[in-house]
Length: 114
Length: 112
Picture 1 (cartoon, rainbow over the protein chains, first blue to last red):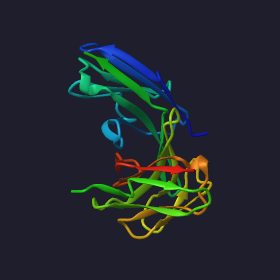
Picture 2: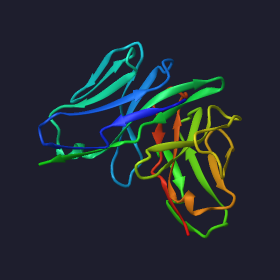
Picture 3: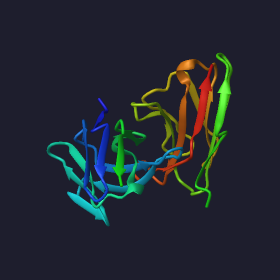
C-alpha cells in the first residue's frame, strides 16, 4: 500500500554541521518527491523537490538525492544554522486514475544548537 | 497574494456538534487537499480534489465530508464531531497534483 517511512524522528546537530534525513517509499511508480519545512505554528513550506528522472538536486545549502532502485531519497543540509531548526517532512507522489496525491512521512524534528 | 486562506484559525467544539472548515486559494490552482496533523503521525490526507467537480477519499476520510464549491474553495465538514477529531487541519493547493503544494496556516480544532 501507500507508505512513506522517514528517519530519524528527531535530530540534534551543532551549528555548522551537516544534517541528513532519510525516507523510503513503497510504490516504484512514484515519480515526484518534495520536502517541506514546518516552523512552529505555521503550515509546511516546500523547500526542494526532485523528480524520478534526476538523481540529485541542489539549492544552496540544501540537496536531495534519489535512489530509485532502493526506493529511498534523502535531504542533506550543510552548514546548518539555528534558523534551520524546524520539522521537516518528506513526501512521495502516488498517482491514480483521477489524478494523484502526496503521502507524507512522519516528520523529523531538527534542532540546531548554537 | 494571500495564497491559501483557512478559517477559522482556532475552534472548540462539543462532542456531537457540527462545523465546516473553510479554505480558499487565489493562485488559480486546479487541485486542493485537506490534511490533518497529529503528533508523531505526520500529515495524513483526509480528502482531495484533483480538479473542480471531483473529490476523492484519502487515508483517513471517516467522519468527514468535503465540497469543492468552485475552483477557489474547498470546504471540510464534520457532521458529528468526536474527540478523536481533535487535531490541526491543513488545507493545501497545487497547480497539478504532482506539483508542489502550498499550505494554509492551519485550523487548530479541539473537540471536548
